Image (cartoon, rainbow, N blue to C red; front, side, top):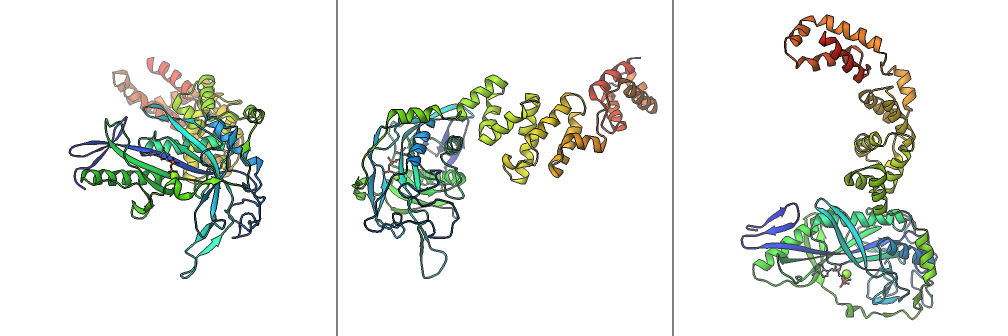
Amino acid sequence: MVGIKMEKNKFDYIIKTENNLWEVVIGLEVHAQVISESKLFSGSPTKFGAKPNTQVSLVDSAFPGMLPVINEYCIKQAIKTGLGLSAKINLLSIFDRKNYFYADLPAGYQISQYKNPIVGEGIVTLDMPYGTKKIGIERLHLEQDAGKSIHDLSPENTFVDLNRSGVALMEIVSKPDLRSPQEVNAYVKKLRTIMRYLGTCDGNMQEGSLRADVNVSVRKIGDKNFGTRCEIKNVNSIKFMELAIESEARRQVELLESGKTLEQETRLFDTKKNETRSMRSKEEAHDYRYFPDPDLLPLKIEQKFIDEIKKNLPELPDEKKERFIKKFKLTPYEANVLVSEIDISNYFEEVIKNADIKLAKNWIMVELFAVLNKKNINIKNSPVSSKDLSSLINTISSGEISGKIAKSVFEIMVETGKDPGKIIKEKGLKQQSDPKEIEKLIIKVLQNNSEKVSEYKSGKEKLYGFFIGEIMKASSGKANPKLVNDILKIKLKK
Ligand code: ADP
Ligand code: MG
């Protein structure tokens, strides 16, 4: 590949070749599994990881004559999600059959929504380093998941597990508004955050609750029209989405620059080779012979029903961020970090119920996050409770211990789960804040270093830090730094 360079400057993701600058255009179809005890059209449970084929009703296995019954809770969840995307909720929507054959689809069709989805256009706001960017949502529709074919259990056979068959999915289709892997990363994370706040999808990508078809095309910078797109199917991690986009965009540029034309097709991302490969030529909607499912009436929703859901909506991440900035004087960056997960924002709000905000945000974002990262655990399972962190912060604010000592107390809290008061007492870490005692300590240190004191007085002011260091050492780090500073200054003047 000659002369192709990816440039990630501040504003654009550009593919630079000898003669051209190319831009990448991306649209996502995200499949989000609805949090619901039972499936979209049957009462079977939806628990993850159950023994194969133990959560399958006659409806899910498509026995002749079985009729689907719509699950009102899933409808509510879709409306909630739509409202979280500031989208239009359609009072009338229609369930269609999308016909295709596959062993894990016993009915021979998937019930989905085609022309009349339950949710229409909406917006997702991204915070990028270069400012906020609004990504359009085309639609959100409800559909059933298919079963799972298992190819790797036996060399001769493929097994089918129908536990997933009929589980409710929301397909959230974005407009082709995304322009880089970074924006896709931010978009998927934002969607996930919104749905987690709402409790409509757990966003667990390892378990397949969130996966996406990634549509990619390229065009020369300045072109008004979009190029031909390829759709990369079923990518189940954000990292893979980013890698797939990079390699697919590069492939398209190379192809176009060598004078060939691009076929619209469906591709797969090979995570081992880090490249996409062709799966099939792009199917057209008419290949699926969509038609309204005769077993299901059109879905009519009353405005009252929507208003009731709207009234009970929790505070959403964007609102919370605004509140944090205004009320707690956080920077947009800090607010973003603290609202990125509802459990983090809850923890933060617990801590600052009775502790200093500035100290709290720093302790959470620096010390606590480092521990959580290292141990690879969620804040929900934090070894330090919000209550204990708040007490620790108060011992700093009140001058009982210094910030430095607090760090070692924190380490012990992480390892033992003990509360800070107990640790400070047991280890005798209380800060020395008696001016008389500190003065004595300083006098002693200065006496022991009388030569350095003379050097200091004759102009070698750099030595100030040395004295501070010696005094702190002599107090085993317990002397109140502010008092040490104040008293030392006076002593050195004389
Ligand atoms: P289909 O069902 O055929 O995949 P949809 O309309 O459901 O079509 O989804 C199309 C997706 O592809 C949307 O997310 C849309 O934003 C995206 N898309 C459409 N045109 C382009 C393009 N030229 N380049 C990249 N993405 C595109
Ligand atoms: Mg598609």
